[in-house]
Amino acid sequence: MKKSAVIIKISLFFLAINSFLFCCREPASSTSSKTMKSDRAANRELNIRNSDTLETLNLQSRVKNELGLTEIQLKKDTLELVSSSGFLYYPFGKYKNINDFIQKNEIWSGYKTDVIDTADNTTLYKLTFKNSFINFLKSPDSKTLEIVKVKVFDPKILLINGIKIGESKGDFFKTFFNTIDNRNIQNVNVVKFESVVTGIWNYYYFKNDRLSYFTFDTDYIFRDR
Image 1 (cartoon, rainbow, N blue to C red):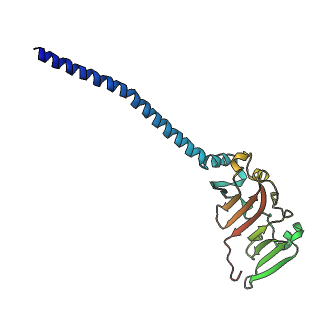
Image 2 (cartoon, helix red, strand yellow):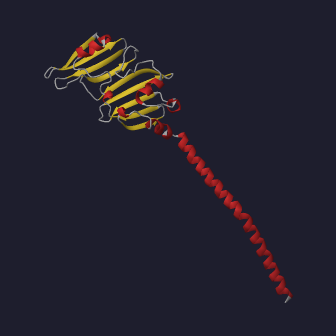
Image 3 (spheres, rainbow, N blue to C red):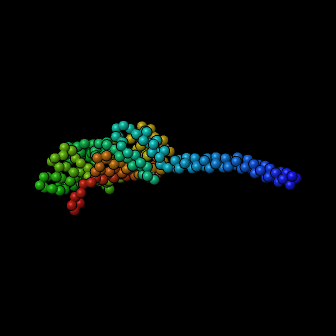
């Protein structure tokens, strides 16, 4: 009888110890779980803040309607925009012929003319000013001069919206955006515009927060050109 009583007491003793240890472990496990969840949340927030998403969203919300923006993406130091704006095709304005263009832009008066296709009288105009150039195309079927290729370094050459070499990055962005937070553009060194219709690409390059030069490319292909 005494032996049974001793065994019962020992069993109760170990049961009490196990209950105590379990109670001690439970809060620690709960605290650890909360800490892990907190760390994961912090990591997710860090990933968002270190990505280009916030800057892109901020810029997208400020863009002017006339730009006809369909896509915007920030890749490292390059801001890429896809637009339906006619400005991409006619950054110097619309002109019926080369004489109209020269009349409004006299610095291009020393141009060279190349006849590409004598059969339909398609003409390629090569205009140069110092180390800058514009190549225009004019065919009998087109009502306006069409850009083929452009490269501009000189501040005397103006685009139809007033953009010019040497202007600040902030002034450049104000042409296309209603308001600008400099924190969103401080790391942007290249702005690329692509037409939603495809076929033309405009690139603007910045150095020390100033427009250094710009180039326009198209998908026109000419033999031996």
